[in-house]
Length: 129
Image (cartoon, rainbow, N blue to C red; front, top):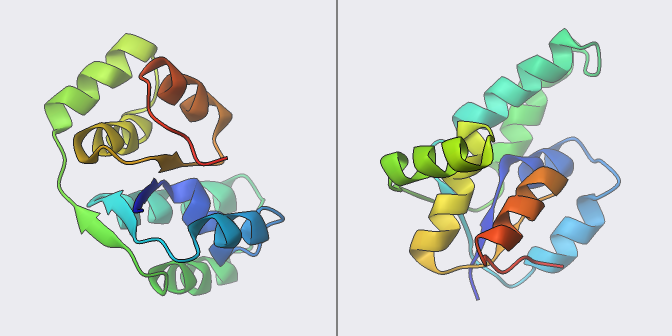
């Protein structure tokens, strides 16, 4: 079965974070789907980590390249409906994009973001555990 994966999942793999093995195990044999804004969010997140002193600037480009090596189907989504989700639950638009993608595609969501998991449950989106 396919699965919608958010940027936190890609970053955990690209940055070799502790959740990396959990992500790989849960996505093995599945096609990964993400909204077509995925790489913009990954780039933004890497720069945010650098600005907060959590990532050396010299590691931004290699991490971005590593994230791009992960096979993923980038798909369009209904941005207006996603923005309604963002407003209703007071979350970032980027988070709502993944939720809307999961709703539209009727696919489970894999994320490391607890806030997004909470909203996904309220929206009756199946979560990868």
